[in-house]
Length: 117
Length: 97
Length: 155
Image (cartoon, rainbow over all chains, first blue to last red):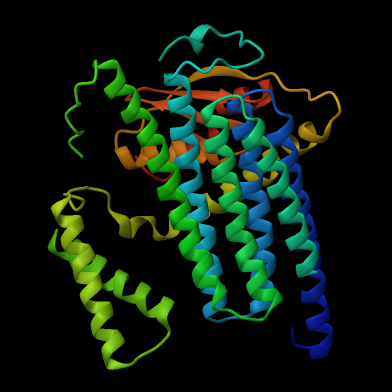
């Protein structure tokens, strides 16, 4: 950042934060719409996955750019890491339990492995 | 800009809540609960920045972990209930791990 | 194994310091005590018997995470566009993909990465196959090419 005036750098960081937060909010909203629109549990999990990964990632990284180097950034990193490690596990278990209980995929799938597993 | 993000998160929580109420199967409702809790984690973090109180991040951190445990516990409860019911009411031996 | 336990205690203590950010004697003692307690409980659960050399992963794993985030961004935008599309152009199907990771950690990482990528969802994992639910045809063929499987730095 050598030859730029400090307030210009701060402005650039603000713009980056803006872009990330707006994009993240948009993707979270799209994920919510997807959860409402999709036809069955499995496809809804895909829609929820967008909010959990891209939406959460963009919003948290956007907050990180505002908090600078310090405890807050580390904590945001940890929240992101926990979300990324725990959410897939929860989705996997949810889908597996749903399949075990015989929840049918809504538009019938073509490949034959959708029988009881 | 934090206000905008918070508003988007709240609207999304409303949409997902509608799915929780409509949801034809139990799993739709568990999925909706999980999704709402994820959004709640983000909302707490954003509110921490909105009101300039970084302590909120600790609560968000805790919420992310509790959300995971809660989903797992709910699903495990559903599975255990099924097994007990299919065993003619006899309690099943608990899993080893 | 002793080395492993000691390093875990150190990591947990560093984690405590990061979260608390305070250095009074009482809090340091409490932190050391809780690190020891967590390790004792984990040892009871036999969590220290793995063979993976975690030190080797310090460089290769972040590289993989970077590749994975690019992948997540690409697939996420694709799925997002499909959701807002008025006709909802999805073709969900179940596919079985082979997995040749010998360690449980490798398989878990693979399944977690599959689920983390929007559009694919790992449902059932065993020694040789993973049952995956895909939202689109393209996501399935991407997974079948096995690129992600090759990129994972675990065996």
